Length: 266
Picture 1 (cartoon, rainbow, N blue to C red):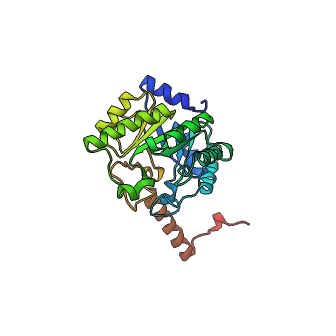
Picture 2: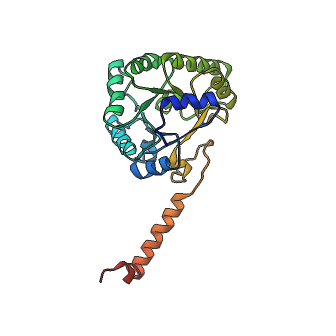
Picture 3: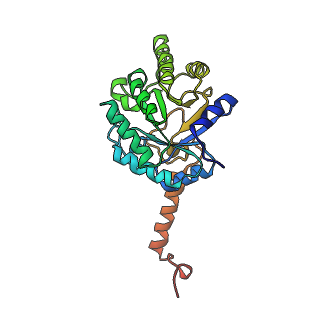
């Protein structure tokens, strides 16, 4: 199977084929996701919450993102790898944004980056695309803006808010983004945006009408239960399985049944 590229994203939209996308943050899980045939792996700054145990994504650094993206890229043979630009890696200046985004491609092996924001980052998107750095834009609920938004709330619910998101979707497309992530917006609004744009939309909590879907891998596998968003569907319960396995190991060691002759050398 050939390596997925940003051109395959556009082809899938034109053909009406859905794009599949998941997050991953290390070698073993990236290998699993890639072997499953997922089109795209996002090394999201969500690692701050599901890997580092933080309350939000804001403290995640560029060096941490580069490290985790490098691990993922090392495992992947087919999927498109996208590195997520962390908070304050692109907001201070266009020059700093280009420099940081370039690190994902140069040091970490990613093929594209994702950044949050609409009209306010259009200049950054233009500069990145001029530098041959493909950009996935991200509007709707943008977790790096939780303090301004007052928490993790559905966006675009009023007519004015929906109109603004539609305008911002067109702005990021015109600025050169190759795709657009829509997070936590009404399904009908996501349908309208997806229908008007020529670039593919990827939904998370945006209903079934987007051109593709993404979820956090730890949510899909049932490994993160501090909170479970409404839009998550669990396909496994690995935390419970892992807990049972560790408890069984503990009991075997305490009973003296592990290691047995089978696990011992002669």
